[in-house]
Length: 633
Image 1 (spheres, one colour):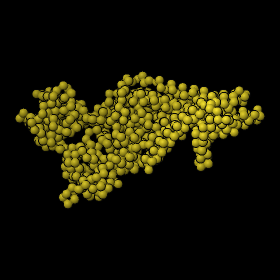
Image 2: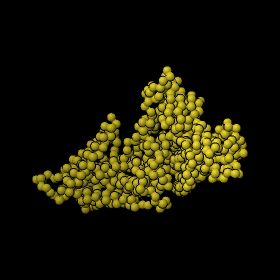
Image 3: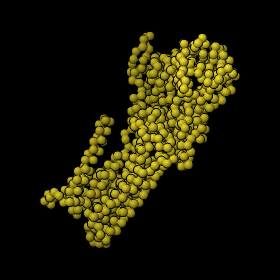
Image 4: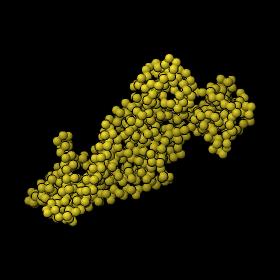
């Protein structure tokens, strides 16, 4: 059914486009008075093709919804022109309005697919162990207490508790934690997260319908349903414009006694330029921002973004690069330099698939070295790795691992505690039973993050950090970025609540994120911006704007452009109203007729379009232009 509706909407837009094209041709032929149809004006084609839909919509709005829109004022001018046999004027008014309608369609809301993406994320099958055998069943048939087997690389289908196996779970999609979490028997796992390393069995503690992922889907549906669209300025003011137009037309008729002048007033007061004021400026701004790798997904997003006073940043993948990096290396033995420590750690992790191990190897390789392969390695799931190299036994892993091996690491405790406070993960290294060094790994701040925050503050926008990561990592990154308001250890629904709490205080919150865990906050916030390069499809589809190349340095320019666009819209509205009131005076004096009034319309509409087009020439002067070419998704 959804596909049928989307197809119908797309076809309706195409029909409107063809109607506008045929109407333009008919108006040109009417103006030059060819062909000769023995008194029949070809402008009737424009009246029917473009005018009938406007009159129909005005009647539906007035009768069924008791709503006065800009279509009613246009209908009045159109009908009055037909009554006075001013066919060209009637067709021209309808034609201009349908152009405005097409522009609004161009910048209108696209059907969001975030909820559909969440649904697709849910595994369709689950591997359940029954009578000692593994069988695949629909995930909906998993019951509480069922034992499931999860292989490496698989998404966990339901919430549960690990019963056997030590594994590494990528929870970034649901919690935003940048580093995979090691899990052991007794630990809880949640649906939607990915088993990155190892195989384990688990006992289901919730059915699929009650899982964390399904709860997110329900919240997303509720949030999307409660998000009201913004009404166009022309429709907001339509009731006042109708009253003013009728009053001016009646006064013109009473003062001059000429019905034609009253009709001319209605024609010139028709809000063609007024209706074009918003969509032309929005289209120009969207075109400008696209050049800088910023895609605006909805037309009304620009208006909402222009009013933002608070920006809530996700941490992992947004303010940071979203992957662990070696940030500290310390020798605990005078006979080993820091370079030696990194080399021996890289040898230990040479066969490891764990993200922390890969980060250590990558660090050594990027320094221009080649990592020698260990003779043999033993993976100690959830703790670390043991490697054998040139007759030596190397152990790299958590402090718990080295303590289990009876290795003293007490002299590195102070350093480790300091690194933990910075949000780093600490790996100890030993050779033949003696601790020789330690390595700290952490997600690192994007190099442009601090300057971005500074520029936003200068615009009067307050930055906030919302993250599912632990408080140590959150406060460390926030301090580096220059953010003082920090909320850590948040699940997706907690981010949603945090955004709502700020909104309840009267703040206009813009959420910026990249993961599935950000989708609820993105869709519930006043406005949402997604990181399109590394961001999940769900986050992108839940947002209003997308940074296609993850360059957060463009965010201040986006805020600047949205505010400038709203100023341009106000300029266009003032310009269009001045043109209209000037035309009314000329109509009173009899200088304008319905036909010349229609031409006046064209002049006003062109002036508005040209003024809006000036937005295309704006440039972001504060950030280097390294956004193009950018990867369109």
